[in-house]
Length: 79
Image (cartoon, rainbow, N blue to C red; front, side, top):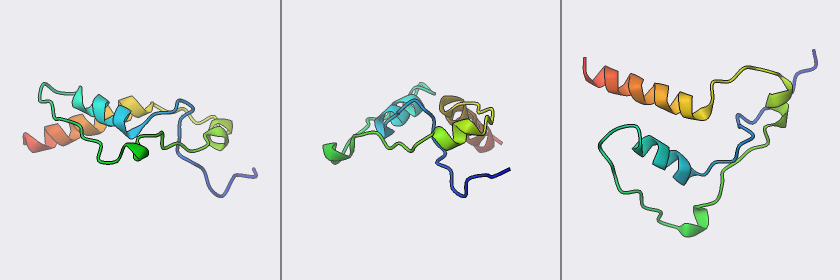
């Protein structure tokens, strides 16, 4: 099979770093203020997801991945 040499690990849904920060902030009762130092950098950081989509690899999703990592970190701190 002729596989691409490089693939953007991206989802079709566009998300900003602020969206990710807000989602992480929602994972616990402890909230932190999210500060944006430079409003010019508030745009989406996105890659083209078409190559990845064509491979038909089942993905869990960005939110599930963030949630899983968060819970793994928290459970590791409690041991």
